[in-house]
Amino acid sequence: MEALVAAQAILAQAADGITGSLDDIKGAIALVGYGLAAVGPGIGIGIVVGNAIQAMVRQPEMAAMARTNMFLGIAFTEALALIGFVLFFIA
Image (cartoon, rainbow, N blue to C red):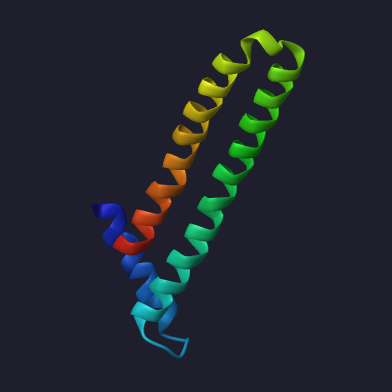
């Protein structure tokens, strides 16, 4: 909680020399933060799917298990993006 108060004080000091309200600045920072938060899950999903396809090609008899694990990996990785999305709306 103290970190949020300190961050708000820093934003208030930075806003003194910038035209625009503090809410506009907070929104811009949150938007950039969400954009950066979406990069990681995007890369993660690419890695998960690529490795699953590689596993299916190497051992076709295990394709069903690899596909199931791929979808679980995608779900867990996508959860990170959803958390970032929720935090974007909270901020």
